[in-house]
Image 1 (tube, rainbow, N blue to C red):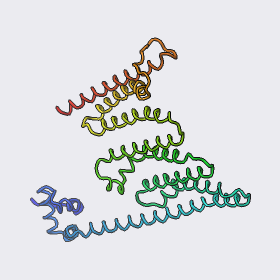
Image 2: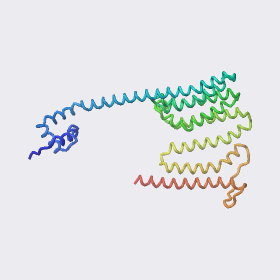
Image 3: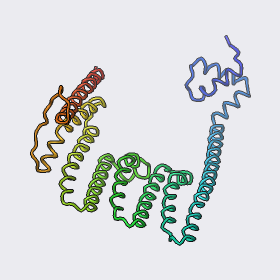
Image 4: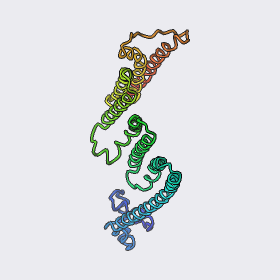
Length: 326
């Protein structure tokens, strides 16, 4: 028995019929309907030649392109206005320096300071792609320029200490994100984490060397080595524990907690050995807290807390791993 279906129902089925994902009964209903309905048959033919999809895709691309151009023009205009506003304090400082006969020292310091502000405000407005990468790059460069200008006009010799310390601090925070940016990631290839750690280690060593050249003390080098070497070893051990084993996050976190506890316990004796002083295990007096026992009690507390927290996290992680294997 033939059943009459409405055009609205058939038009809902046409996309499924075209993609051949409808049931046999629905297919039969569509074919019987379009045999008698030229309007629905014409709609099916337009679906079949892809004209509608091509038109929609073309219109979507045009809308996206127009919006992108609009936002680029708007960002460029706002950036130009902000840049013009930044010029006002520069001109005022220039006029005051020239009128007072004080030279251009403050003018250059203000100019460099505004470069730092511009790197965080104007650069994101003016750049359309890789905005975050260009912003942090511009900020780092402007900060180094500001430090150089301040050092020159104060007659100091601390520039390399401040510059290397700033580079190390910025790299420690932002370098893991920078290496994932599209222009950088393609050139670095594999093992980006190792390359980040090598860069941070190199900047840390460079900073310590610059500090040593600045203080000009023979005692500094033994102290710097005794303090820096254990810290660098700890950083690489933590990185290796997180990066290379294929355990879950809880097991890795537990292992790192235990390592930090053990490291904190043995750091004092290790520094004593590197400094050429007698080393020994600190005493533990949990019921006596005074100026003579507090150091030993703290390192023992760190050791116990690290091992206990590590054990709890590792056990939970092992339980979760066991459930996955079942």
